[in-house]
Amino acid sequence: MQKGLSIKEIKQPTNLDISVIFTPEKDVTNYQYRVSKDGQYADYYYIDGNSKTTINLTETGKWSIEVITYNEKGITKKYESGIYNLDKDSPILDVGQEALEMHVGDKLSVLDGVKATDNLDGDILSKVVTNVDQLDLTTPGIKKLVYTVSDEAGNTTSKTVAINVLKSNEFSLMMVQTIIIFVLLIFLFLLVIYRRSVGLEKRIAKYGIEPLKDNTPSLFDNLYKYYYKVVSKLSKILSKSVFITKYSKRYEKYINTVNKSYKSGLDFVSTKFIVSFIFILIAVFSKTIQYELLSIYEIIFPFFLGFFILDIIYASKYRIYLKKIENDLLQAIIIMNNAFKSGRSITQAISLVTTELDGPIKEEFKKMHMELSFGLEIDVVFSRFASRIKLKEVTYLTASLSILNKTGGNIIKVFSSIERSLFNKKKLQIELNSLTGSSRIIVYILFLVPILFIIFILLINPTYFVPLYTTKLGLIISWLIICLYIVYIISVRKIMKVRM
Image 1 (cartoon, rainbow, N blue to C red):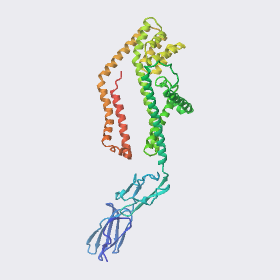
Image 2: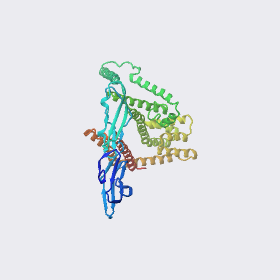
Image 3: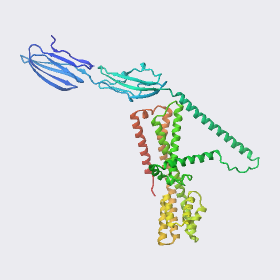
Image 4: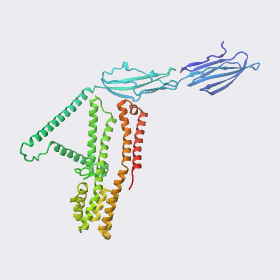
């Protein structure tokens, strides 16, 4: 009979229970044994006598046994086992989606997005097997793709993915692509004919008598009118929504400034929806050329891009509008002050500005002249002007006129003071721009360096940034980079901004 431990060691991982029998020698009177799991003592037992003991190992871990025996003469003897590698934990298999859709003829990459890990073996993706060779993907219907993975100990995990095989959309995509290309060719053909007719008209115009003016609207004029009809109808539909109506209030300041054809803020919101729809059409066209369909994310992104890109355009145009008024305001003050010195009234001075100046400042003073003609008070008219423009200089001018209108005073001295103050501020602004010009150029270059760097890398290696938008960690890093870049731009602009 074998004395000692019946099983010395099991190095190869196993998922079966391990029973180790310890048989003491004949002269042993008592003994003790310790069972360790993963390097730490798990159990301790004392056996009084010479009977054999069965030690059962049933849990996952790396086990070892240590036995100390005592005989009649008091001599001790130590038995140490090797490692019993017991693995009962099944591998973790992540197949991503539990249901997929594909069309007949599409290629199926069965291991895309699949992850398989084991507590002992680590990454075991190479051991994943499927029944894809047994599936008929050439006919429509629901197919069951089974993933199976086993670790070294024999533990197995299986998962099933339902594949909905649809009829091929190649024909429908080809039809849509053909229609789009046909429409584009017709448009290009008409554009070429139009340009040729315009060129021919210019060449023969000098040899003929000037014809009578034809007031018939052109094709582009008709398209322009039709577009505004669509905007108007869409605005009526959107006006039924309380939320959109409140949202459109922020665009009221753009009326008669950014676009003089729009009558309300709803027209601007309607234009944003139309542009979003155009962006979606462009995305559909680009995907159609590639014989692919859009996912939900590829629809949402163009929609929001088209919806909010107009905010940047509106804000830029409005900022340019205010800048022009700010630049011409000093000339308007000078003209009004000279008018006061020659004995003219405020209404006459405002009317004189509308005849002497051009641009946005002329339109604003025309509004004020019209409001005065309808009987509004001077302080009310200038207060409305300040609320529309929202410039510090206009607010200062409005406050001065309001005080003069209530308390009286020498308007010539007040306007001379305003003129001198604006002139000094303008002079200081020009000097400041000349001093900070080189710094602003450096800042703009620093803004462009990351973008130019990305373009340069893409030209060298187009797949370099693929992990940034194809993996979860890459998406997190991408969003972090974008946030840091935005914070960087805001911080630099705050530092470079000089308040006057």
